[in-house]
Length: 59
Image (cartoon, rainbow, N blue to C red):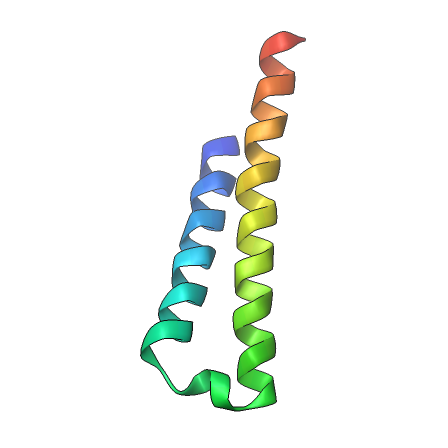
């Protein structure tokens, strides 16, 4: 389950980066919010999943 959450976060970051680099979506405020949310949530999911995995291994 933890690895699924981790890879979902990586996928969200990749999608946000792709939208930022290869589309004109970020020219509008709603597009900026969408890309920012994808990048931020992707980072939080992937980083949080690794922290939970480390805590589980040590406990």
